[in-house]
Length: 110
Length: 116
Image (cartoon, rainbow over all chains, first blue to last red; front, side):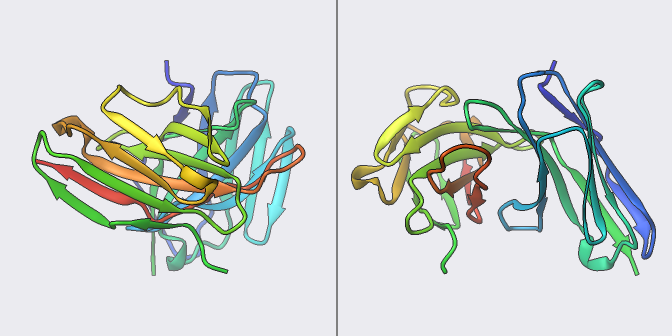
């Protein structure tokens, strides 16, 4: 079993839609939960991170963590064509190395 | 401030040859990480330097891979001899040395390695 499982997609939505991206993880020792965005031919770029259960909001983006069910989500409101990218969930343990999901490719159609 | 840079951006070599990838972290970042993504798989951790010391090399696939960070600045990752399954994108990331909590890892654009 992979340590981090991510809904693979791809996902294609119309502009203005609400997008939901999801991951599950297996190791209770994981401490920090991240969402990275990666544009084609670029490196991953951190969008948000959190370390506790609950919601964290940043503009149109909301990260949600449920430690009891080991489930993390990213919601994008009012999605824009510029949001088209691959979204990666990643989790940090005590060893300070990131464990990534496989990524979800999102396309927002104008 | 310059971000993490990697060189070359793309390398095409034949099986059995040697390739050296270079990473220049953000100035002042003592933590340096190597990750790679092979086709169809997730990005996976290779190793972690703190300054010039290898903190964790548990992700290195085998002894054909050698990473160095002399002087605690830039790092090189050498693959010798390269095999077909080494093809993929190699990412470098750096972060400051913190006292606790989370220190964001900043990623470079990656080196795309193709082994023929």
